[in-house]
Figure 1 (tube, rainbow, N blue to C red):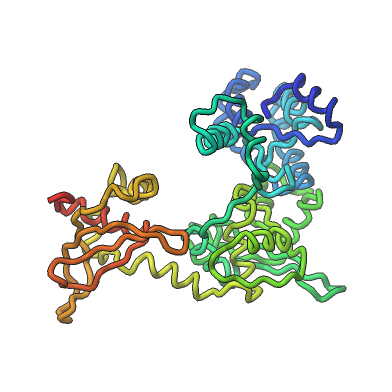
Figure 2 (figure 1 turned 120 degrees about the horizontal axis):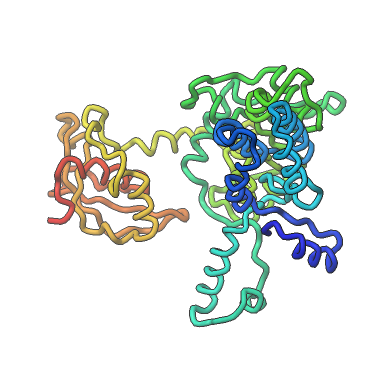
Length: 410
């Protein structure tokens, strides 16, 4: 909810044990308005803004306390006493301090009410486009409660990242010595991940592990200041192993599997709290525990490149604009039939074995399989076998065709 003492009091009067999440987007929008409280307004962009965002990334209540202590101590050292007093009263008080993304302790519930407004419109549109009623009335018409998670295919990027996270140096098991049992697994964040695109990839070691685990328990390194917050306390994520329940995946990601994951594991990353059940760290944990087959992730990494033009012809690819890959994926997601009968160029091996060459093909109607869209490209005169493309592959083909000045519609 928005920051409103009167509304919060009304809620608590009816439900004394209610947990109120402070809407982070509204908080972030209000921050620039408080620059006038600073003794030096230049410090907002240079220091305070990034440190506000560090606090939003806190992984639990104790972690939030450690980060907020280090950061407010830094502001006081700069002479920003007025800002600290305002911040403590407005955003560190018992009622309004729950604005970091894991604050609900319930995956699928985040401190962001922007999605609720959009969700309410969608509920009404699906239930009855002509129904002019409050969301409360509409919700009472729905036969069963809406859950904080949704079934669906795992995004390709999620599987790719999980595959990399299983490499040595990117994960660190935490072992309960008394029980001789792994109780949690730590993972590198993308910014320091080995095997990814990190500028400074860093293997997880005992020192990093200890500092991070201590911070989750409310303890900090006494020598640390705000400058060490990101490096020492925000470069790892932790997946808790909460039960020994067996997990068998049949590649459909059914509701049964979703609920098993929610009982079995808990990750402290933003992705897990937004989806309510899945993230790259969860997939990597399943792989490490032999409950998810790592080669599948490797195949997904490779598959997106199977029909991509070779590097010597990729120089003309469009990086921005309506024919960039991200824009094309948005277009294909919202209008899968909009490219039917378009002509495209695909570089692949010819049937005669004469090497790679460009083939012209026509996009045929799409079909659905394994909860995903696939488009078929048929080639002129059977010059090559038909190609079945997923959404990312087709976007890359369209992205390749456009700068070659080849007409999509002929």
